[in-house]
Image (tube, rainbow, N blue to C red; front, top):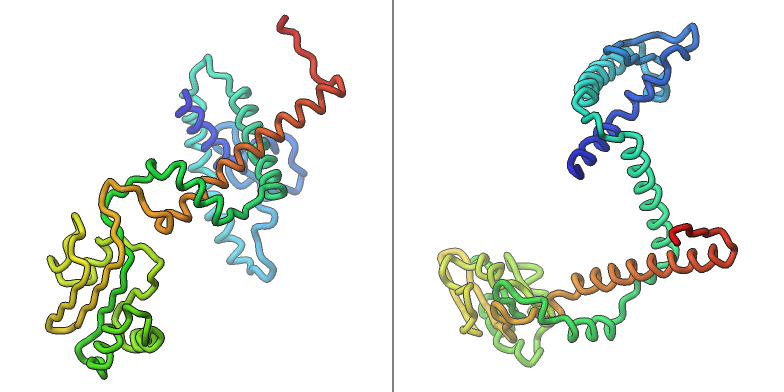
Length: 287
């Protein structure tokens, strides 16, 4: 029944103009032009008002009209067949009322959220939420914090790059390392607080160089016919371990905001209920 409801709503929404055409039967001005008719449904020229931009030529207007009429006819035929297949015990008017109520309610809830929802999530809130629910965020594969560089063998001053790389452990020469990679590297990751899937790191290497099932090797230098690769892994979280906070921060923020939204709307309902109850605008007759 729910699926049928969705299908009917889809037809109703896509056929708004079509239904509008039906309302014109017997109500059109005398000068209005009938464009098409399918069974008991009619389409008039007045219903295309606003579809012709300023400066539209007569030829262009004809193309627009003809294209619209062809689409309208097919929608009308589909709706006609849909009407014939509706079960006799199905209350279409109630479905339409329920669907309308759902749209109106959704629009009002959106207004409430836009006006009243606090969208700021502090680092403290994120950390507290993470500690409470981190076991629910199990990793499907390893993630790492690391430095990674992939540079063409044709790049200049590779010895200088090697020197920068060997000294970056103490953050010495870090800025020149970043500057060099910005200019010459094919790919590089030099943000030590960020987490990355090991699968994404491995994809930048030749096949088989970096294992993706479980990380055991922390430092790696590799060279092939085209590139020189550097990898230095600081921290690892393997599969089935809780995801690190920095890796799921955005997911946590969205979840916190979703909970806030739910609570905001529930509080609004209760506020409205209490207000209207005091105003004697609510009567209950179940007892």
